[in-house]
Image 1 (tube, rainbow, N blue to C red):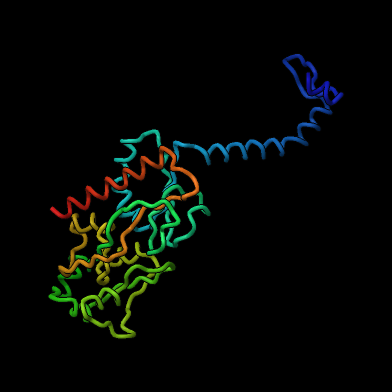
Image 2 (cartoon, rainbow, N blue to C red):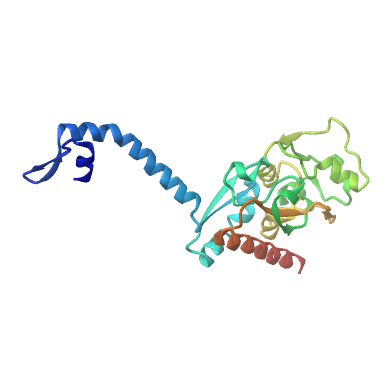
Length: 264
């Protein structure tokens, strides 16, 4: 009634079974319907962006596959009201650009411009499938790797460690032109190792479950621990939501439990 009075046009008419639109009312509805839909969508997206029971985590595909998925049911049991949104990426981009609450980056970097919390050390070993190691023979020392098929990673981010740097740490030089398999996704490198295609560098916090299950074996006793640990990052321009705080604390507790179990 107030709208009709303001517009000076009759929009509604009483009908036998209720109230309907007049011809002017129908035209008015058609004209404003699109705008109302935009308002509804904008309000919905704004509400979702400030939904404190939802948290977005960005990790690599390999981390999500081999570390997060086997554990995520425990998080849901502890926090059934929190909606966990997981984004997988194999590049390190700005947190603010993707609406991410927490990220565990792939490469090294200067994380001081972000809020950051220590996650775990970077510990790297050589791994292969039981079938591959049985077929090609055991390794006694890092130099033996020169006679094996090595699975390489060609990353789109500042790579933490590759075969050259791992071998050089133990005084071994990898001949130029010796690459046989190169992939641009670490999850594919791990899958190739699982299928017996060669040996891979294994970041212990990612491939730990595969070692525990016996699907991969540590081919050499050497464990290279670098001075470039992994951190959990968050944008520094806004405080963490309660849901993001719960996820951060849970991630830190889970990785500590896994590391303690591996050291026993």
